[in-house]
Length: 101
Length: 164
Image 1 (tube, each protein chain N blue to C red):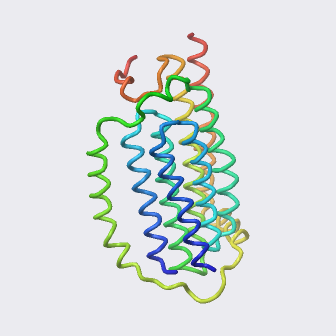
Image 2 (cartoon, rainbow over the protein chains, first blue to last red):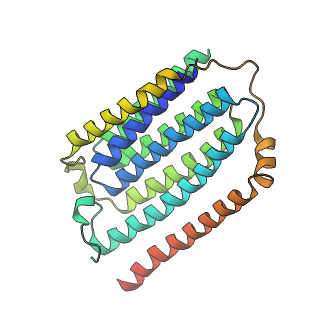
Image 3 (cartoon, chains in turn cyan, brown):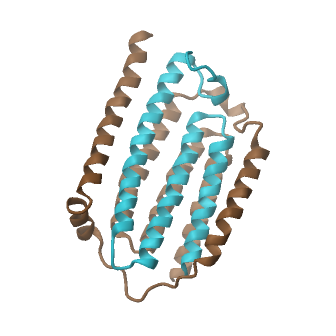
């Protein structure tokens, strides 16, 4: 097992998430793609910490920060999705094309 | 053993991520998202990051995945199951993914670090010391962000209901 294995896994997960975030019509699907990209970045941080700096924990601490910020992002995003759904009765991104709806 | 753990967990993560992205049924996508996040927790376990394993399960699998599931159930309709879930730009998205892959490829190939000797040490106590020592300020900033997110979520979901 080398570092390249983990980097390959995280690159594949990042690309899958990027594809989902770009192509999904549903806003919830876009948010799920963004979550996959966050997780790919976290795998990278944890792998770098284990392989390049095995005595320290700073990579792990950065992952904790990323998890906290991602949790805040998904909470606000899902609240916005519910508000948009109540106001416009749709969750599809192409129907929401006005700033002042 | 380590090889087997890595490849089986990678298969779980990548196949369920493909399901999240490609499946038509959003409810199944949300359930597979939970499986994918649990697989990422297993990857943390294979890297010896014990605290990350626990917090991934606590925050992602039992927090975010369940929240996404709630919103899918609240903001979904039965008629959506027959609708297309992918927009017209999938070819352009595939192109962007290919370009990004080409950029990442070099760094993946050049990173040839072997596994350092010694088994991983428990990381919980050092992380706690780091959070209350050198990283105390970022730690407080993250707690501020979380409070702002909670207040924002309440405001967004409350004002719309008052108007309707």
